[in-house]
Length: 588
Image (tube, rainbow, N blue to C red):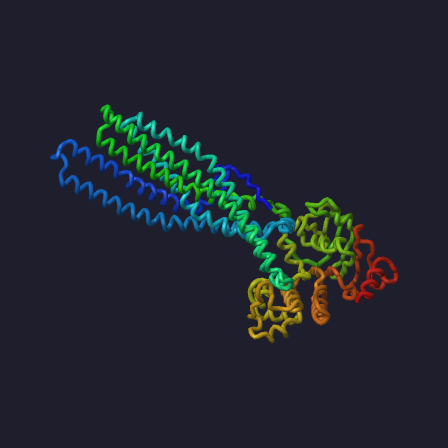
């Protein structure tokens, strides 16, 4: 997959980045003051040399020990000031860059939390990891050095220009006319460097995604003895990275070579033209010495800017990739006047609900019109792709409806805040996600700040307390990456304990037992029965024998809800549900 190498204008990116300096304006201003001090200290040296040379050429009596010592003492004082200012720039200036990087990382992570299921269905986690970590590493140096380097360069160009114009305007204009020409000649390489840096960062994300995919699936890799295949895939991505990086070095080489050529041209112009002006009596020897030193300072400044341009382009690439994600708008957002959902009874109404995914025009649900009274237990069955999970995902508003409304206690869910809506809905899914940490921390995820007593009570209700206490570290047992140290049934009961702790009035069970063995299914089903009591429950069923006690069963097909009723009513009807049930019991 190739990244889009089209880059945004530098001015646009800087405009978007500038607000991050606002919090740290006092640090930035003092840092620039220190930069000015260090620069002025450096610019004083040519004037000192000029003054000494001028006195020496005027006559030996004019150059006294007292004068030299005073000049020397002044310069030592300036160097002490320079050292103190440089210390502040190196420490506090870098702190500012780190703070800005941290703020951007916070904003990026916060924004990623807002993006919906539709975004993550096509995003690669490895790519997002690269943008939130390595891409923003470049920003620390950029945030500190960018204003500093350009401010120093502005002083080092402006002050010598003013001083040298007073010595010889024609020579000064000849020298300074070469700077715009150099900038024009390096623009091509600058643009290409930005493109290749963006390609490189994208490829780092691709490598991260491939490594994450391979390592998370390491058990499957090893079970199929496919380590060589995974290594081949990794090497392919790694080789692509090498090609991109080598290409970037070619453009960097062209950029640095161009600037070195102009660097040499400017210096030889000063030496030769300055000597000719001195022969013609239009430039004095002290002025010539000062000229050479100032041009040397100017060229040093240009070299610093040239060296910084590589860092500048890396920083701009990081900012651009940061902005690309920040510009992705969440597909589900709260209405400006959204209200909190409180005192929920659990009455749910599907009012002519229709839905299709944004990347596919095929209708998944069409004109679903049904009412679920509070406390009712609804089971959803039907063939794969009939929209069972989609229908349940619309209740907590993981996606926006394409038609109709969903009402909870008579309130349209689009008028409610997402947070309050989802706080009142509990979900137990087939694939249980365990966060890195302890069993106790994973249960407490259902109610942040829960006491140990509340955690243990929830575990008891979920039938998990017994196996947890038999573990060596009990509730302090680390679950491993994605809970690898626990069995499927144990993880499922922990996820049920989470929901018990949350205590929501509406419950969604998405094939919660389909991946379990018979013994684990029996234990988990018992926990789910207990969890469902007194709650409006939607159960997506794979094993039809588990939903015979449901208040009502919906049979979903691509045409919507084809049948509904109790298990007994649907079996007597001898329709689609009867066929599915007979098929399942025969297979069982």
